[in-house]
Each structure stands twice: as structure tokens, then as C-alpha cells.
Length: 462
Image (cartoon, rainbow, N blue to C red; front, side):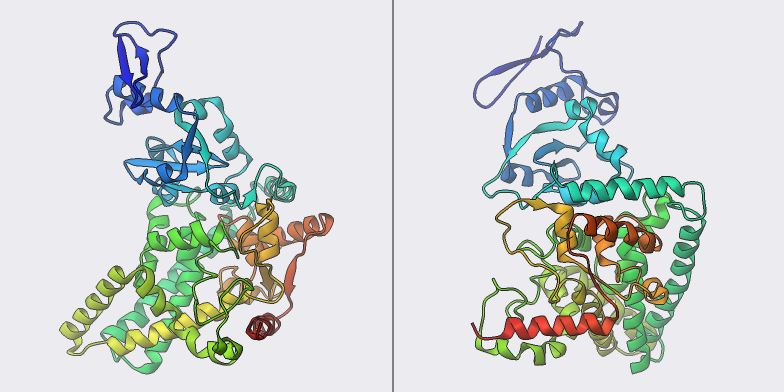
């Protein structure tokens, strides 16, 4: 008889050496090949089955590849052994030790969500319900807006299945591969010219522009899982690692962009929204200082340094390695250093990134809820906290990878931007039916003016 003893002294019967009893906890077949003995696997499952609740602090302690817990819809799952079977493999690790309900909701179809509810999955991986010190910000169970949106979007893709407009169809793949080829050639050429070639100011500026094209059209979508199901694994990984051109790692990007911004858009937990403290005041809850009244005048001179500040705050180690490597190559092959070329690139990229991205959430129409006091539907909050612009311009949509369709991107982040125009018709129709605001600016200038209006309003003395 095999028994284990919990920390409270209770002994749990796992099974016998020859015949399974009715107390035996049966392990799934793939856990036997993971290197754990059958008895150890059974003991691990028995401990999980004996628990009813778990704290977020304990979940956070299980945040590695070899010990991975995630929280989905208020329940903790030990998915350590499931990672190897997940379609996205390592993609799942971005949520290790965290609540990934918003990511799961926006990435998975109804079939994927059905797997989570299945008795087979729950019996193998469920740890228990999660106890929180603070209430959850959003609800998913009663989010009728998102449920209707998901149902209609899935119906749309069923209607175009097998055509050139299907997910992963001819049109999507043509855009993905052509963009990758053209933009990567431009990025490599401008990087070479800045680091090893002439190193002119024009080349450095072009490098910053090329980096904007890389992040909006290649690495951004790949880090959201656009390429997981219908493209070769190597291509998906290569697209994610295109982040290296920026001097950053895609894993870091996924940690603060996917897990923070996309799940907690325009709340106190959104690292993107709260990045500018204490120089900006974008929301009522932000601290006010005397100089904030002039923010609508000086922010434009601070925005270019956004990329550099991000390096200092979050990725200083990898950024330093990138800077050192580039300068070593430049000195070895060109007999000079390329510090100022990389600085110009960062300033151009930082300014362009903020001027394109900031207006989608930091404007006078998008809602900001510092700490939600009532549980609003997660999908409804995405509608209220995001804005679109230039929806009629296919050129803008193609150049910026669908960033101008921010609402659709936040609601269905793993769907390629080529589908956003058709999806937007569904989202607008459902939002009107449910009487939820759908914020859209006709032109970029309109969105920029709304951002300026927000800066002026938040800079007004209290």
C-alpha cells in the first residue's frame, strides 16, 4: 500500500503495489513518460485532489517550466505536464504563476474552452479554487457581451472556412510571408548600415522606422499567438525573436504586454498605461503636481525616450548586451562605435511607438477604471477602454499590422489583422445591440486631438 502524509499529519492512501483500489488516483499516460515514477505521479495528484483552496501567493511560487501553475476563471491548475501537449508549447509559460483568464478568454475558441471544462482535464490538472486578498476585477461567467461576440465571430469563420479568407487561408498566409520577407530585409539592411556601414543619420532614422514595422507586423502578432496553429513552429519562433532587433526579448514583452496590458487594460494593473509616472497624468487617480498643468506642452519631448525608459525599467540586462554586441561588431568591422546611431534609432522608435499606440487607450473617449468596484464583463471592458482609428484605410491597417483596429485586437488577440475589417462589423453591431460604446475616430488627427484633450483635462488644477 502506498501512502503519503500531508504537512498536517493526515495520511492519504494512494494505492497498492499490485491492484488499483477505489482510492487509487490514476495518472494520465503522458505523465508516465515525463520522468516521474507512477507512484510519485499518483502521490502528486492525490495531494492536489485533497486541496480545496489555494492562495495567489502560493500560485505565484509555481512559476517555472518545471513547476507551472496558472489561474483560470478563479481556479488554479497545475499544467506542468500539460505544457508539452499544449499547441503553443512554451507560449503557455508566459502565464506561469499568474492569472491568465483574460488571455485564455481572448485566445481560445469554444472548443478550447470546452477542454478546460472537461472532467478529464480537471481531474488531472485542477489544484483548487483561488482565495484572493482583493476581489477579481472582471467577470467572465456573466459576460454576455463577449459571449455573443465570440459566438458570432466563430460563426463568421465557419462561413468562410475552406475559402481564401479563412484563418490561415491563402490571403492571410500571403500577407504574413510577404510582410516577413520584405520587412526583415529592410530591418537587416538598415541595421547593417547603422552599425557597420555608413552610420549616417538618415540610416539611423530609417532603422527606427524599420523597427516599428518589425514590431507591428511581425513580432507583435507572433507574441500574441497568431502563428501557432497554422504556421511552422520555426517560423512562429523566428517571428517572436525578431524582437532582438529592438534590443529586447519577446518573453519580457509577453510578460508585461500580454499578461498586464491585454488582461487589465486601462486599470491600475496595466503597466503600459501607467508607464509615464510621474511625468504624466492620464487618469483621475494619478498624482497631481504643479508641472502637470503643462503636460500637454512637454509630453511630446518626453515620448521619444519611452523606449530607453523601458530598457532601464524592465530589460536593462538584455539591452546592455545588445548595445555591447552592436558596438563590438561596429568597432571590429568598421573601426568606430555606434552609440549615437542606436540612440537615434531608440528615439525614433520610441516616439513613433507612443504616437501610434498611446492614442488607442489614452484619449478622451476610452474609459479608465483604476480599481473596478463592480464586476464588469471582461469583454465589455475591452470595448469601453479601447479606440479604433482610420478604419477605412487599408494602407494604414496593412502598414501597422491592424493596430488601428485596437478594439478587435484586444477582444481576439490571436486572430490575424487581415480579418479585423470584417470582424469590426460584427463587433460594432453587437455593441450597438448591447448599448456598449464603440469608440472610433475617422482620422489619426482626430484621435491625436482626443489624446491632447485628455492631457489638457488631466492637467487642469484640482
